[in-house]
Image 1: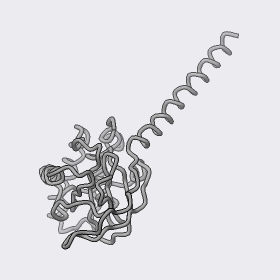
Image 2 (image 1 turned 90 degrees about the vertical axis):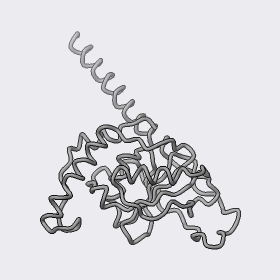
Image 3 (image 1 turned 120 degrees about the vertical axis):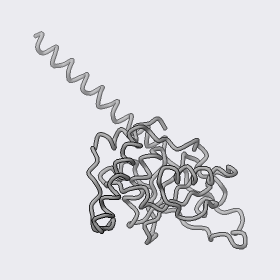
Image 4 (image 1 turned 60 degrees about the vertical axis):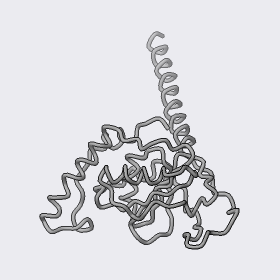
Length: 214
């Protein structure tokens, strides 16, 4: 009889733990979800980029099996999706300080022209930029992943209304350092990003890098 009671208690405890895990996954998905853009209230101003459609919003874990690449191989353009003055420029400079290359000058968001990106932000990328997006997601773990039809490997980082700062954990910094230290070896061997595989990063380190409160 005592053995049955112990077994029953373990079953209940296991159920509680799994429930909490699933609730945690749902909570983080809710916290990082973005609203769709509203209809533009005015046409683009002369000289401004034409409005662009939103790509496919992806689950937060959709790039978990994608290996990151060195930040200096990644061209990031920061976009203003929340209407905050100069924030995009400040974050663009902060990314440069972390080793990322600029993919263009900071600009207003052509996908959310009404500045109604109501979330932390979005990382937008195409098929050629999945590895770049994976790296950026390590220091912007609260940003929603959005895949669109662009052909180049560049990535857009759109800042939303809940964005406060880049969340660079100690683990994320370690990942970036490991990737950066590999670049001279790759370059001295005469290889390129496409020809030489990036170093293998500890999966536990990648998980910890994105373990933040959103």
